Image 1 (tube, rainbow, N blue to C red):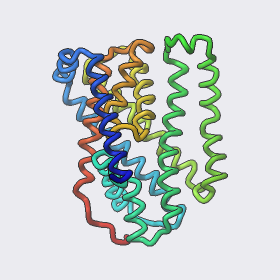
Image 2 (image 1 turned 45 degrees about the vertical axis):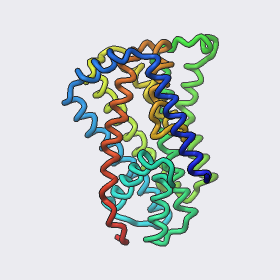
Image 3 (image 1 turned 30 degrees about the vertical axis):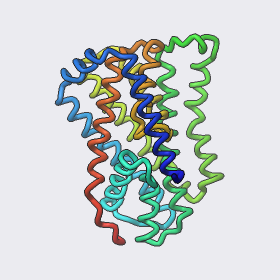
Image 4 (image 1 turned 30 degrees about the horizontal axis):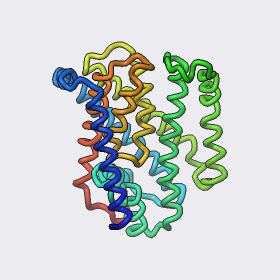
Length: 287
């Protein structure tokens, strides 16, 4: 049994365990009722916004590609990005979406592996930095009733983090990814815009579920869950996101059944959009 198979089995076990824990903690009848009564118009708007957010992150990645002398059309780039999304979500035991993009671009464009790997790594870091920036901002306005943090200067540290997250990222990029500095402002603008649009997407999902209170609290937990879901622990982040909502509800004043319904719907939207990447297999010629 090779390492990839072992990793896939472990992910499947962790995913199953996470889902089991989630459904032990919630009222499944109430969860089903919340999902069934969701307003489809708002969900459709949420899906369009999610697609727009991914379009912006694809533009960010192509900006990094241009820094290493790789010039591909935005159409080509978006096709490749969509296939990467499909691989990340549905083929977690393989090389993954980032590995697929690196392989295809190296094969069809002759771009060296090292700068390609740096591009996709920086793309991931840029997304994380945008999430942290917004997370620090929300900490300043969201009430967090967590006993272990009562004597912790959370808001002060969040204010510092809000001011320093991009300067620190600039220094990291200057030290480790210097060739990508020309795209620093543009790429981070795409990152912030994409993540803000995802927050609006989350808002639309919440409205579709009839949730009109503690919106910022739900979005705060959504951002935290987005960071957890990136960790390669479960299949596509399934279960991990929901566990974050389950264990956060009593500390930030959100309903756990509605929160899990929100998380499942967001995953469903991302899965439907990612499925688009199963079809555009052609088009990797130089253009």
